[in-house]
Amino acid sequence: MRKEKVTAYLDARLADDLQALAARRRVPTTRIVEAAIASFLSPDGAEQSEAAITRRLDRMTRAIERLERDQEIAAEALALFIRFWLTATPPIHDELRDAAQAKGKERYAGFVDALARRLAKGTTLAREVSREVSAEKESE
Image (cartoon, rainbow, N blue to C red):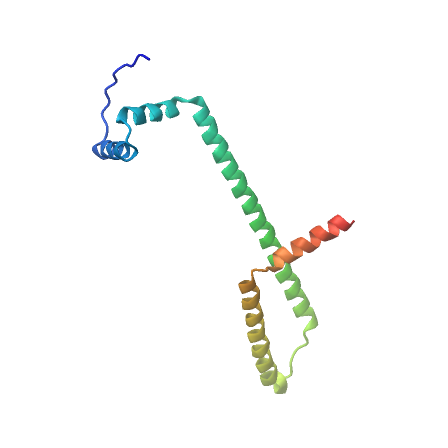
């Protein structure tokens, strides 16, 4: 195979990296440069790169869509709870306020403990709701 000489100037650090790679792989620097240029000029290389980027973007899009769905579920659950709490909780008389606040602190501590256990277990409400909805749709 006929070869042609090409002279190129490289940044000193890039040239050092090229020499080090050639030494590690025990191949001539010419072979590394030829492979790099061939890869750069190859139309398949660009298509492969584009396909890889497209796959990565698709995965990221699906992940963002799951996050949006989970956020919507959390916001809706919070809104329903607030509506229920505001409509179902009667006002407290002054003489019962201290006892109610103490009970509220106790319940809040229990809530935080339960939340910590669920988060440590790895099960989330969004996943449970998603599974329940999927199971209901499949049974229909």
